[in-house]
Image (cartoon, rainbow, N blue to C red):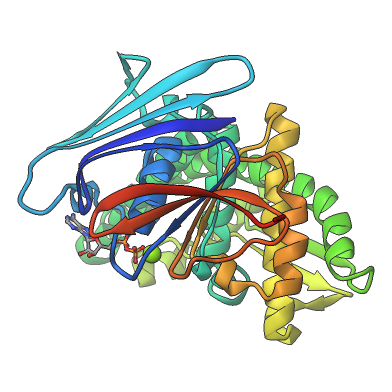
Length: 363
Ligand SMILES: Nc1ncnc2c1ncn2[C@@H]1O[C@H](COP(=O)(O)OP(=O)(O)O)[C@@H](O)[C@H]1O
Ligand SMILES: [Mg+2]
């Protein structure tokens, strides 16, 4: 799958910009704060319907303007399509000219895997980074998943509000059963999706990581959840009810899910070196890429935001070997040289993109 062109109108620091993309490697270079990540962000938006940098769509509208339009033309093995996103007071999304009723209807058109320097936090940082990783991947493949997440979040908010009312206004505690039932209903389905995809990642990542580490490291992933069975989740909610009332929020549930990565049976976030974190994260992302390939029968688009500079020469080479015949969008501050690779260069200056020449690392 690949994107043939993007049109931006009052999006971030772009006034009007059309970008034609090539079906292989596209490199956007330029100094800081020129608009490179904004391009990646617009593509991600076309894929998931949300930014990876903000939950507030208004931030995407160019300063002093009131409406932003993003148009993306894409090709897949079996069809072509056009996605149009308008952001004004609210967000409207069109697929081939037809207005979508739900955000989840957008999913499954443009598949992407994004790499950013922040990805090091997937393994190092708190569990919310790992949940975000799972949520972005699964949403693209199972549109119903994003819908369930939304329902779960809403129910959680309502339950939390009610917990506060029990504490402050002495409301009837038994009515919590209604929220518990709903949380369990959505939560257990979310658990099943997450479990399914962690298993898929697990199957792919072993060989990828062996290859990158010359068979030195055996990688494993372990998933932790309060909702591994319906009964577990019900029991957790029941047994923590007093605690939840005292705290005024729900202390257990799939909103606390997490997974850990082990290298030769040692947990990487406890024992891993900086280099091991990087390599494990790279393997995780490459596994995601391959899981998506297996699911949809073609490769997703890779978005590499300032990412190549994160990799040393050895990792960069093994990475490039893994991503042949895939559309890749790379941003960087230097004109990087990709050895043995043909790619297209674009220069980004102050919200303007100029297509440059073809570079051929082989010559
Ligand atoms: N809503 C907006 N309207 C206008 N400019 C914006 C908006 N949001 C961000 N910018 C500008 O975009 C630039 C950052 O773009 P970005 O793509 O992140 O830069 P980089 O090239 O470093 O990746 C900054 O100059 C910032 O002020
Ligand atoms: Mg940037």
